[in-house]
Amino acid sequence: MPNWPRLVLMSVLILFLPVSAHAERCWLVGCAGNIGYLYIPDSQIALQQDTGFVTVNSVRYKVDPTGKLLREYGLPALGSVITLNSSAVLLPYKAMGDASVLKEIARWPYDYDAQAKTASLYQYRIDEALGSAMRGGATLQVLGYVGDRAWGYSHLFALVMVKSD
Image (cartoon, rainbow, N blue to C red; front, side, top):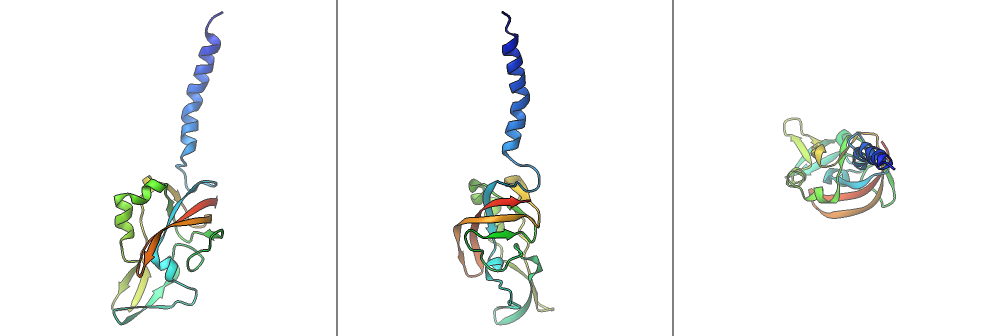
């Protein structure tokens, strides 16, 4: 008997293997069901619903909270479902130590306008090539935390599962 069944089977596998490999990594916006790490900036942790001002070097600045990472205020509790206020990147564990990520998260979380006495939240820009892009409005469930926070700086990442994108 000829080898045609084996050839057909190999042809089918060759056709479907690239699709399967591509499906393992979501290149589109969001990734419902995926688990990864989300950087939590210090401004997200420090801002509470009634926070209107921040004082730096004895100067009081009015804070514009519209640029915060999450729609919720403060540090989310474990198990809670949160909503992204702005776009973010879902990172694999190994990407948290990437030089570009470490450089970006070393930035001060506020941008100040000394003349207007206002402070806006710095919009962190983590390279989407390191993980999966998520749009504002995506919902995530907090599974845990990795890292730490010192006053004014955060090296804290939330382990999250994407609920909806």
